[in-house]
Every structure is written in structure tokens, then in C-alpha cells.
Length: 283
Image (cartoon, rainbow, N blue to C red; front, side, top):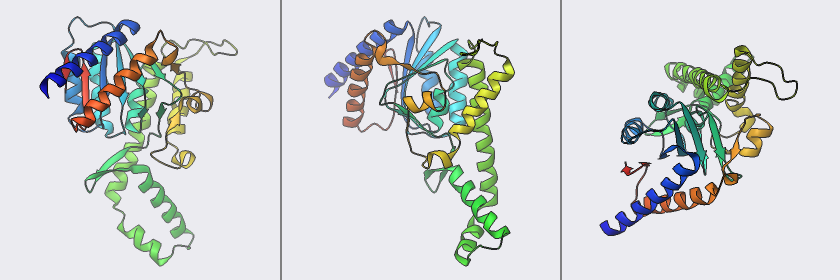
């Protein structure tokens, strides 16, 4: 299998090189759940890039994960790069959405999606969305206050761990806080005038707009499901996010599609649960 591995890696590097030339940027691919240890792999992949450019493009595909890991990854990326582009060929859900929104630019196509940003926690060996617990607690608590709580619901309420609920509340606040900070500092850094009235944009206006986006993406009553994908059109029309279509950039769509298909096929055949790739570096 080694000659085949070497051939596939050569092909992957060739696609990566084309993307780097098209965007005039270094490229790192992060195809993985966002779990502890991923931040170390991303750090190593970035540090391995010699003669770094000013811009990093991140090809990003994830089902989501841990918010604290996202914060470390963003800190690492911003230590080396002034401008960051996120390319979403498929999906970047939950914590992955927050990571994507830390970029200066977001590139998607019609099939790409982001997701609600309610944070996830590991519970009984699997990740669970925190807001599901918080909303259930608030619903049951409201019924208890007005005297309509059933005995079955009382049993459910008594099983909820108040310490965990506090952690969930803090995680919800952190997800919004990080999103507001990163949108304000990076995505909105060149937003100087409003589109319609050409009014000068203040720092306060940037923060207020970022807070609107954070609250909209954190509203699971609106999206109904933690795993629901929010496509580019919805993000642009309803959330008013500026997103570029990477299929309209100098053959980038074809190159990204070929790269991702080859990479995922390689991962499937090798039974790899995650993959981080930079120029000549594989984790």
C-alpha cells in the first residue's frame, strides 16, 4: 500500500499547490471533529510551512466539537497570519461554524453549510448539545412555577445536574463572546460604511451587528435541530453574512472538489477519523 499512499499524497499536494497559487495563500486542511489534540496537529501543520505568506486558507470540514479547542486553533492561526480565509466545501457545524466565522473571508458554494452554534459537551462518551439541556430545564422550570408540572416531568427535572447546567450556560455565553470578538476584529475589519446609506461604521455598530449574528445562530428554537445545515443563501439573505462563492474564482471550485473527493476517499480506505494536511505534512 505504500506506493499507492505516496501516489495519493503526491496528488493531494498537487491540488493543494493549485489552491495556494490561486489564492496566493498557504493552505491547511482540517477534516476532523474538533476534539482535544486537534489543536496540536493544526499547530504542527502550520509550523511545518516554510516561508509563510501573509494569508492562510483553511479548507474546513467538521461535524463540530469542543469550543475551547477552537479558541486554541484560532490563537495559533492568528499568531502566524494576518489574513485568514475559510473554504467550506461541505459543512462546518457547531464549533466549526464559530471557527469559520473567525476568518476574514468565508468561501462556500450552494451545497456548503454552517450550523447553529450551541456548544457541545462530552457526556457518557458522546457529544451532546448544551442548549438542549438548558431549554428543557427552562421549560420544565416554567411549568413548575405555574403549577402544571406532571409527575413524569418532575422526575426529569430532578435528574438534571445543576452544576452541568451552569457549565452549559457559561459555554453558551462563551460561544457568543468569542463570535462577537472575532467577527468584530476580523470579518468586519474592513467594514467602514453601511451599504445603503454609506454611513460611517463605528466599533459599536460592528459589535452590535456581530451580537445579532451570534444570537441568530445560537437560537435553536429558530433552527429546531443542532445538526441542521444552514446554506449559503440562508446565511446571506437571513443572517446578512458576507460570503463568497469559491466556484466563481479562477477554477477554484473544480480543484477543491477534486481535492476533497480524493482526500475523503483516502481517509475512508485508510479508516482515518481525521486528517490535517499542509504542504508536505500529514497528521
